Length: 162
Image (cartoon, rainbow, N blue to C red):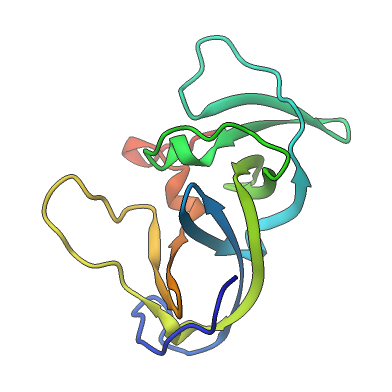
């Protein structure tokens, strides 16, 4: 599980205010998002595929009478797509005013962290992109990538994903 984050400075949140996050695993890596974007967490249920959809789009799911898209977060992040298992979860989030289900391998924890513990992602040359990241949280046993769902689901030219 997650340990207390090490202290560092993040230009995105200089106030040091408390931030609630939900941490989840994709493959062997941990990611997190702000809980303010999360509506609920559900166990995996089969989605209905959509013809000619993008590789990250798993399909659609009926959520209490509302049809929502299900996105494979591993594929969205450029990793090998996750295969749903009994431990998989769907993080139901609101992004750009739309509800979307995010398939993750496992929900790890819900934490309150100090905003100052979020470090900026390092600058590197090459094929690495920081566009989806709000920063990195250093923990005792590794690092957690802090994702920005609003940027993650905005396409080229500022168009929204939905």
